[in-house]
Amino acid sequence: MTHGSWDALRCLALQHLSTGDAEKWIGLLRPGVRLEVAIGSDDVAGRLGGLPALPAASKWPVWEGHGPLSFVASIDCARLPTAASDIDLPEAGTLLFFYFDGQLDDGDALVLAEDRDSWAGARVLYVAADERVAERGTPAGLKPYPLVPLTARVEMTAAEPWHPSVRSAFAPGAPLGNRYDHPVCSQEFLDALWEFDDEVGHQIGGHAHSVQNPVEIEIAEAILEGEVSWEDPRLSEEAGNWVLLAQFDSEDAADMMWGDAGALYWLICPEDLAERRFERAMFTWQCS
Image (cartoon, rainbow, N blue to C red; front, side):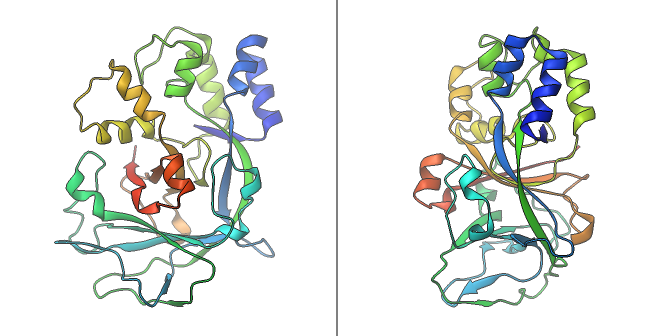
């Protein structure tokens, strides 16, 4: 829910928590690659919108029965500060993100984590650095988003206090996804976190900035087909199996609006990331 420098977040924690709780909370911070609109001489690490560069043999992603997906973003892995990330990103190649955004059906069909039949409506493609590619035009009926270059920098990211990892550190017996009786859940500390930073933003790795409940819980519920309650430890265990691959916020510069100023999220299991099985990434989206 928050991002910033390690020093700034440590200072914030020490202002509102005991030294022991502050150090424990700081230990849960994770580095994430923040992506911002590039200006001037900024190094470009990716882009929103535009047209994707695809290998000749690759087909444009399609959700059968609904139509082609819209191209959201491309990330040049070689230009990311991967050494500072805590997820196993490729050192080179390109990640391409596609999503069925409602252009073809006026938003009638929704891509939802809990609806397995809709999972084909969001896709991640990985194009290796040695593959020959060419820019591919958008399929009929789709309007490409304006191209917006992105620059990358590493910041520390903090999860919400009701995130499974934070809950297990401070109140392992507390209900999943809810506030509990501990200073990290106090209104004072929550207000300080929101005043420090309330921007979702675009990001690779790190803790997701969830608009609503932690996105890891949404994915875990989908994997378990909604058959376990939030009190069931299997849900918390499954949520711990997923890490953020990428999140893309609504962005005026790219004419991107995800619901009511929401965000798109792709999560992946570390073992699938290590094996470059990006087709197994899971998608969800949230809005206010």
